[in-house]
View 1 (cartoon, helix red, strand yellow):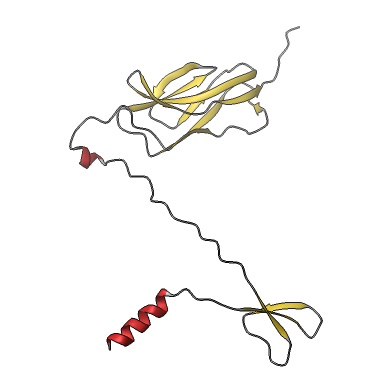
View 2: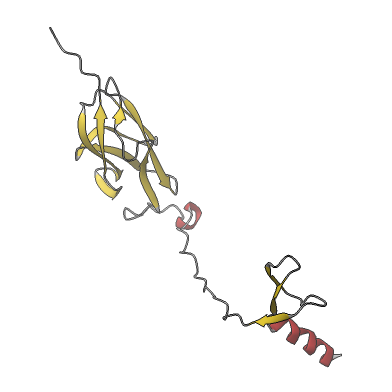
Length: 175
């Protein structure tokens, strides 16, 4: 009984090795198969060793609020994703009155006590908010840089990459 069990375990531990055969079919096409066809001359194909990719452990999860047991959240907490969205790539943004919405993608969710601050041309724009959509109004035409910061009070916790974009507006001339 033990020998049978050991044999079964050994069979599962040894990786399966399949042989591939190359032959010419009835229409003159080169074909490959894992079994040599009956009545046809086939050659065994030598295959290189399989590639293997090692796995890595995922990064540790941040502690949940229950694990913090009422302690204040760390000011050095970081977000895995913090970026602006809903902006054009490699083209100008047409906003005839200079108004448009900017989205913020943030993962994990914004922590309690943290707020988002939009920066336009390196300066804070509007008031800090906890909503991941910001309305920009009456922005002048031309080139601008935008980014977003995560704030805890007045302290900057993290800042997104800066996005440069050109705002196109209708020019209304005066007679």
